[in-house]
Length: 314
Ligand code: FO1
Image 1 (spheres, rainbow, N blue to C red):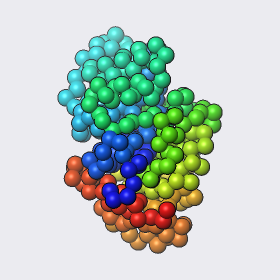
Image 2 (image 1 turned 135 degrees about the horizontal axis):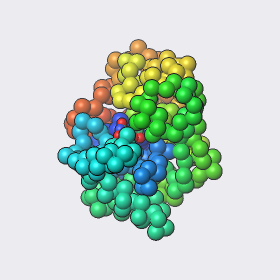
Image 3 (image 1 turned 120 degrees about the vertical axis):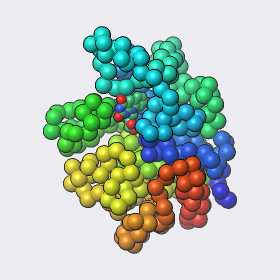
């Protein structure tokens, strides 16, 4: 990238991690920090599980399973099988090698280390050179009000396979939480913030809800990449969720959701007809191919987004 050596990317899990990997191919470790959502985190089987942090970490380490997007490639499931045989909870699949991450993280947290420090340690051990930061040290948890009652995020997402109809989403603890110190330090004087194509309601909003982060990001130079292409979600329940919340699944509706926050919006060629309506919201628009299928398309989209960002009004 021509201008700017301090870029912050906000990411959820699988979809966001793809662009994060592309950005990591374009920017050096000192130039890029990736902030992951931690409102999907939960305590399960006595362990501290941080799915989005781990998805980004494994992706950057080149260890992620390419089909699932989460967890490790070449994983085995003996522990889960043994747990199931004992009548234990096996709906949340923790692979044998992935379990080592959760054991080590849980141990270090129990010893009193903060989540950012533990994440940095795990990343270093796996050879991840770019900075990965949890959005906050404090506990924030996404809870969904659904037609089957109040559900914790992973219960809704994994156990119930996103089947319950969502009426409202809350990020418990977000008001009282403060952004990670490493994030605040980076945000001060950042050249730009990139919101990866993650689910705006389930993955990005929890980050924006932390303390005064939304206002800080609005005051920076921020762009978002639409996770909705041609009315469909690239991954996960975003389109269905939008319908349940009374919104039309479209890139334009995602842009409306981020109104007041962004200087620029990146949307797919398939949605080019909506570009003028997005511009009318006060954002510059980049229309390009946003579907990332391989390393080359991730790096190409990342380079285009960085170029777009550097060309925006300061
Ligand atoms: N997602 C699933 O759909 N099923 C699983 O069993 C599952 C296990 C899992 C284990 C570790 C991990 O880091 C992630 C895991 N995920 C699983 C993904 C994860 O729950 C979601 O993709 C994110 O929370 C949403 O971003």
